[in-house]
Image 1: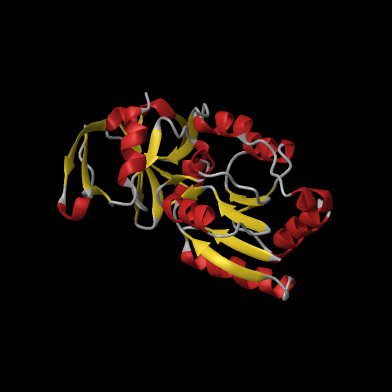
Image 2: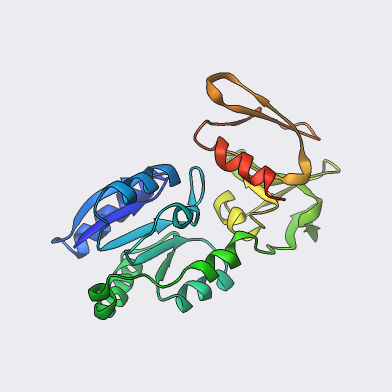
Length: 253
């Protein structure tokens, strides 16, 4: 069995590779890719594998963009932090998922499900992902976040959040009124919970609200400099690999 891994976190990809080879020493990892662009190129130019392990949030956008650009004939195990609604959608489309952070047992169970789909492998066809793509292209997203500050619990409406960012290794909310609140979730988890139409992960540190964006400037090395309506602790730069996805997100209103 030939397998490719599509995952933008190199440590996660390496961990997944080790688990796969430990469970199935006879398989071959024939490719590892970190972006939509690289994945599309590989799937277009090379023989498609028997199985794909695919992260949802890649360096240059959601992995579902891959299916818009190339026909994928391989079964897929999604690696995701998406909410239960999305996971149920994956199940109905006949592909499995593992929830991050995954364990050896999670991957073993994924293989067991794939093994049970022998007819699936023989036909070499993939279930129609168009409905799944429609559901995930513009999800409603989480409406509020429970926060704790000054010995009190309160909720912050998502529409009032200008951006989420990492401060002192912890996720933090910055509201349009400049109030800040700490969160226990990781930025990856928050990204999966909010609307992908309303919020964009500009880099590893920041997840910004469309309504908070004031202007965008060209920067050195084909990067973009994003300015918000309120000041950010750090300069918001988008690398050239993520620029097309960001501009497409800005235009898709």
